[in-house]
Image 1: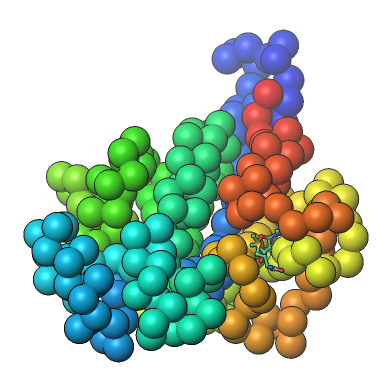
Image 2: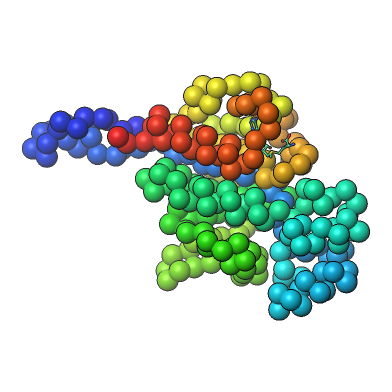
Length: 244
Ligand SMILES: C[S@@+](CC[C@H](N)C(=O)[O-])C[C@H]1O[C@@H](n2cnc3c(N)ncnc32)[C@H](O)[C@@H]1O
């Protein structure tokens, strides 16, 4: 909470109450994200081998990307190519979140929980590469090294954890979003200290049994992209709880 009073001066004892004494934080948690290295079942596929050769990396260290491996995914996971291997959606999402005013104010934390129960924490100071190819390379490095540092600062870390352990560890009120949830106005579900759960997939539903624990809210009658959902909430949170 910020106490808003632009009239106060340093000599005024009330001044210090105007300093940011924020009691809350918005955690954006992307759940069951379709972000993974090429699965073992696909490593011998001719299209995968060709793609890995072009990328100059062993196939097992290359990110699954349906933009380039659509056919190979279909051969090994029939019907999977519309859902699996979507680094592009996290590339757009992270551009939006990391550059947001809320993040620049230090009031946003972003976590990506993957379908294989890995959790990526993105530090607020992390700037996402402008080039998609460099973003993919960065994610591949992260999967290999488990962390990406700049000097002494850890920008990205990758750990094993399931979604519920992550949310329990964060210890904040959880708000789950789904297009099939109860119609709700964003203003009515946003809390000053909360973890917002958004599905990290373009098709289908959550793989984790989220509905056994949380009731879901829908913020629009149609399905939205994950970055538009996140930006709707982040901007409103900033208006409701950010400093003037
Ligand atoms: C692109 S959608 C995936 C769609 C998937 N068919 C589904 O029904 O969840 C990805 C995520 O965005 C969020 N989302 C998309 N549209 C939404 C809406 N209208 N209201 C609330 N959340 C939404 C949900 O968290 C959803 O899991």
